[in-house]
Structure formats: structure tokens, C-alpha cells
Amino acid sequence: MIRLTLDELHELAVAILRRHGFSEPHVQAVAATVVAGERDGCASHGVWRLLGCIATAQAGKVCRDAEPQVVDQAPGLVRVDAHGGFSQCAFAVGLPLLVDKARQQGIAALAINRCVHFSALWVEIEQITAQGLVALAATPSHAWVAPAGGSRPLFGTNPIAFGWPRGAQAPFVFDFATSAVARGEIQLHEREGKAIPPGWGIDAEGQPSCDPGAVLKGAMLTFGGHKGSALAAMVELLAGPLIGDLTSAESLALDAGARALPYHGELLIALDPARFLGADAAQHMARAETLFAAIVDMGARLPSQRRFAARQRSLAEGVAISESLYADLRTLLE
Ligand code: NDP
Ligand code: PYC
Image (cartoon, rainbow, N blue to C red):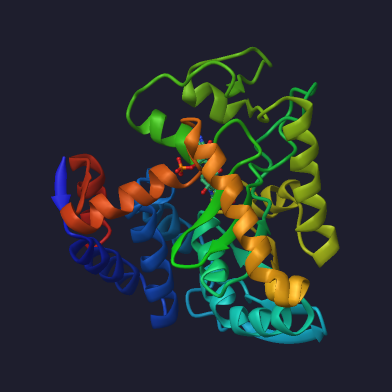
């Protein structure tokens, strides 16, 4: 393993993205996202993703200098056209209006269209909870996941993320794929030559498999059987047809074998407890704290607790990445 400080890792990410011709807003936004993933112990959405970003650029499947455009579509709806660029800049330009609208009305949505999306959703969720707002986000991907009872890929890995602000404390955040696991996790197992656990996927013949390569060519499975499958369908609908954007199957069809990162939309919703509750907000937010305390007091852990602990460690000690990943990243500088 190679140990790097977060600043060193950030410098490497920035240098790679600049070397491949991304405009400075995209360089900064993408570098911040992948370094945050590595910092928080989320390797499947850490700096390894830079390999996919550059491959996607080389395949001509992302606009390197896209300038996202904000549309104030309705009192409760902001739309951002990413113009084929990565989602991070589109989110950044849409966030201020989303926050304003949520504060004015109690609830508002941000629909991002025509973006290349590869990141963990908690990165965005935490920017909304930092404003004292409750947050929800969902996005499709490419059709890699079989519906429960089916054997061919149709859904994306379709993550759903939720965040609840907790004042000075770290927010309550969960963020997971509606597949048994993110595809990035299976790709990392393949890269490292490791078998995957049963239940993550089936091979091209529809048989259960622990071979990551066979599952990547076959189909991933949803978490929780029919329940994850229905949630995956919900994500397709909310962040696809509802916002006038592509489903995972349409995103994969557009990819036409290029194996680029998915291209589609994302839906985010922000809710303001102060507007919902008025003078009673503090009292009811305290009741939420009672719920969190009850979870922890019985020895269970809150989602994101592992991630926040990893963040503290990384801030103090830096992060370790494998020599082979470091070598592959350095190659992108050549
Ligand atoms: P996991 O199955 O690892 O689940 C992650 C969530 O569950 C985290 O909030 C995690 O908190 C929490 N969690 C895990 N174990 C426990 C536990 N024992 N008790 C309480 N909470 C727990 O993640 P996935 O592989 O499904 O997804 C990983 C990432 O991939 C997500 O960030 C997602 O956004 C991203 N993704 C992005 C896609 C895209 O299209 N952009 C597509 C699919 C996934 P903690 O982190 O603290 O462990
Ligand atoms: O890991 O499933 C995944 C994923 C898809 C797009 C970005 N991450």
C-alpha cells in the first residue's frame, strides 16, 4: 500500500483531470468528490473512479467543459441541465436555489438532467443537511440489475440516500444501492482477484455465481428481493420519466458498448423542518435525537458512523491506496 495525505491525493486527482482537459470547475468538483470517497473509506467511489472518468472522456461520452444551466422551473422545482458534463458541477450550481426554495416553501426538488453520474450520493446529501434541511436523493445508472424473479439486467444499481440534520453533530445519513451492493464493489473484487459473496449476482446463464467477472457479464441482484426490486423501479421512474430523463436501460443503450459511465438524470428533494414545524421545530428535532440515542444505546450503529470514523482517521493519518491503483493513476498523468 502507498500512504498519501489528503492534500497529496487531491493534488494527484487535480493533475489527472487537468491533464485530460477538463475545465477548472469540473476538475475541482470531481477531485473533491473522489477524494472525499477515499477519505471516508468508500473505495468503490473513491479515487479508483478517476480511471472510469478518464476512460469516459476518451470515449467521447462526457463533455469536459460543460457549463450547467439553472432553470427556475416552478416555485418548488429547480432544474439544471448539465449539458453532458459530470453531475457534480450541475449539483453545485443548482444547490443555492434548491435551498432557497425549500426554506420558502418547506419542500423543493432539484432535477438534474443530462449528466454523467458516477458518485456516491452522500456527498450531495451532506451539503443539504449542512443547511439544516432534510434531504433525499436518487439516481438510475446503467441496466445491470435483474428485477426480482427475472434473470436479465433491466434496472440500474439505483442508489437512494437520505439525510437528517443534527445541528453541530454529524448528520444521520444512509446511502445505498438498491442492488445487493454497488457495482463498483464487484469491479473492485474483480480487480483484486477476489470472489464475491453469494447473493450479489448471477452469471449470463442465470445461475448464482461468486465470480465477479461472471456476474459483471450476467446480472446483479437487488437487495431484499422484491422490496429492493420495487425501490429500484421507483428510482427509475422518479429520476427518469418524471424528470424527462433516461432510464438505466436507455442509458446503457445510448452507451452502445463504449463501457462509459452512465448518462441520465438525478432527483433530489430538500425539506425544511423549520418551515414544517415553526416554533415547535427544536422540540421535535429533539425527539429525533431520542430515536438516534435508542438505536445506539442498544449497541446498534447509525448508518454513516463507520464512514465518519474513517473520515477522522484519514484527516489525521491520510489514506492508503494499493500500489497497483497508484501506478494506474500515475499512468493517467503520462
Ligand atoms: P452498502 O451496502 O455498503 O451500504 C451503505 C449504507 O449502509 C451506508 O450508509 C452505510 O454506512 C450503511 N451501513 C452499512 N452497514 C451498516 C450497519 N451494520 N449498520 C448501520 N448502517 C450500515 O453500500 P452500497 O454498496 O449499496 O453503496 C455504496 C455507495 O455506492 C453509495 O454511496 C451509493 O451512493 C453509491 N452508488 C452510486 C451509484 C450511482 O449511480 N451514482 C450507483 C450505486 C451506488 P457506513 O458508510 O457508515 O458503513
Ligand atoms: O457502483 O453501481 C455503482 C455505480 C454506478 C454508477 C456509479 N456507481
